[in-house]
Image (tube, rainbow, N blue to C red; front, side, top):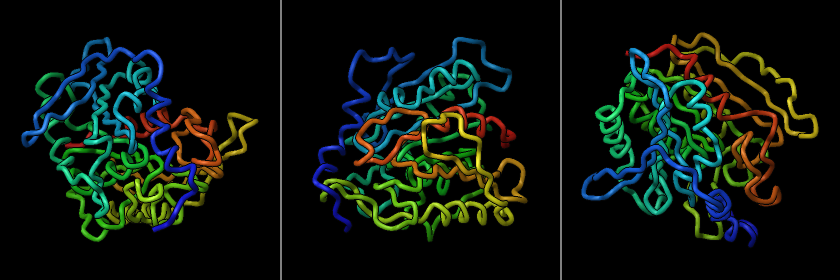
Length: 311
């Protein structure tokens, strides 16, 4: 397994430390749910407005390894977008700050897919949600878990948007979604942790989860094939919005996708292992560059809500 610099093990938990520092943001609701005898925790943000006739769309935001849901809330600032656009966002907590994303190297192989299914049922009981507009995003380990949900929970989840994480190699051969789902893949070309070209994930000197992932291009092509899309369109560079930032964004759409099953790749040229538009939570030498050329939270929500609801 690929060895990283001695700085990386110390930085493995810096994300949680940075994002959890300072006064905690008030959660609308923090709760627990018993799943197979284990108490699982989550926080929920509900917009302060009447629910639409079909109910609120529901967005899951899965934290990266070493984080918890509150860190994901701070990183993405999705609460503000939820208030503007009118959807519920839920920040679940992983077991031991990790998700079972399907890699054989995951240390805690708990049933996180079952947890998400149970959590959807709980939220549907407590809130008015649109069961045809349930979405999942995440970063790093949370991104890999969103990919797994696309494989195993596509009958319930309408779209996924993984950031800085691709399809785990261990689950790719058996990934057969029950129906097409929309996919927005966001990854940096200079990510030192999740390799853009696929291969071994950084294991932080043996203290990380390790394993292998598919290349970004192979992941996008996988979802395009699964959805019955055609070939990729020509990549389209997006105009820079933050001139001092030397990262650049290139959008690649796949043509001929069925309604509600769009596949789009946003490549962050020069970007690292970070949430675009979010904080530079560790030194660029450690995680690469956090791009300011894209507000990933708004781009993801725009993508989700542009898809037709599924039955």
